Image (cartoon, rainbow, N blue to C red; front, top):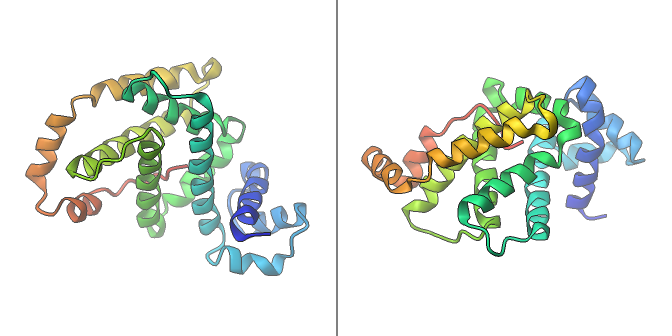
Length: 213
């Protein structure tokens, strides 16, 4: 089996165990046993153990979101509605594993994992924009992703504690946050005033403790 599908299967098998036991090397080993995969393979697949497993789960979730969004159909939807749907699908898919995702964000919030957490959050924002058809390569590339990364992180936190039926309160929260950032030209002016080199400065300032989980 190719490496990526094998890792996809492993992180999927970890989810029910991580709900109760967190993300750890022991949880990864139990998931391997569930799938009848030799534990000796795990250090090659996930050299840093649980942290690498969480990072791969984020990538797996991003790819799943892209497929779900393509299946939902985007024709006739505005950009804002496409982004809303992408974030909604990104979270809804993992609703039954909410506690496992909470534990993943806690792991990534540890000081030594903050740089990785920031990269994962940025990567999720990038995946969402690409999935809705954004192909811009000017300064707006950075401003859009920085803004969406902040919105996604806030929505993720809200969703983790949302007990409303069908997570309705989360989707209302998300719509309000997206409505607040529709005026991108003003955001661009603010950001351009802060940076000399857009990519370097933005990435150095963006240090979210959350992941793209």
